[in-house]
Amino acid sequence: MRTRVFVIIVIASLFPILIQAQGNGSACDRACLEKFVDRYMDAMAAHDPGSLFAKDAKFTENGVKLPLGEGLWSSIAGKGTYQFYVPDVETQQIGFIGTAREENEKGGSDPVGIALRLKIVGGKIAEAEQLVLRGEAGWQNTVGASLEKMAHPHPVFGEIIPAGERPSREEMIHTANYYFAGIQQNDGKGYYPFTDDCDRVENGEKATNVPLKPGEKMPDPKTSLVYSSAWSCKQQFESGLIHFVSRVRDRRFVAVDRERGVVFSFAFFDHGAGKTRTFQAPDGRTVTAGPTTPWTWQIAELFKIEKGKIRKIEAVLMRCPYGMNSGWSTYEQGMSDQIQSIR
Image (cartoon, rainbow, N blue to C red; front, side, top):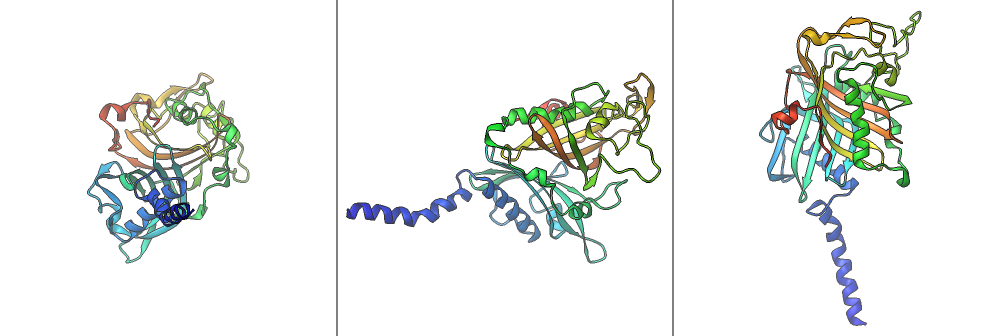
């Protein structure tokens, strides 16, 4: 009897240690992974990596390998308010889209967007990959300001997928990849698995189903020569007018949240210019459209997958040099349009 009591007392005394071990060496659960993002953002805001990282941790910002502590780590003025976590317990990685504040020349600060991937090994951050998005031509506000105006991710992203209806991570990735395949040299004739209520947000602003202005007429996606943000996800793809995206490459699916049906990916959208600007619309007409000089979108994109279809999409993107590499892929991987990572 005394032995049993002693064993119970020892186990009880060790219980807090066992709980803490999740952040010190053993596998992280969802909450633990999200906490690593919070600790990362806190450390960056304090300009002090502290003991959060593994000794040989790798860090990139906007595709460039940097010493830890440089880049936004030097210019950050504080954390932002927008937060979107995509924990992947199976791979011990977490994707995140959020905001921070960065110092400006006037002595104040401006909001910036952040797309982040962390890899956790042995209770430490072994890999940190981030995009810092400050603003793009054509958007009314900076990316950070637009994200903070949204306040929070669309509620659909937080809905739980019933356990019996959850596809495998590979199935979810392959569904999401139809989006990239449909954009590359888009011809309007591919397989586009979008739900009827699919919507896409880019840099904090609606990119589909945008209400028409008074007096405007909805263009017909099957005959129009001009791409429209008023169209649905499927109508935009069926128009065939995104053909000038000549290649969608380095398609890295780095975090899959099967519980909520969310896939987090990094990719590059190349605009080859030249002869890639001229193509045949689905109705046979010849169209010339797209950028006149080669350049690339560097992008982080989130997909909500339900019953084999894409329901919601959220992306942050910025212009980068044509042919840019992620800093995590070989040249061959970086130029490939095949899926680069499932696990």
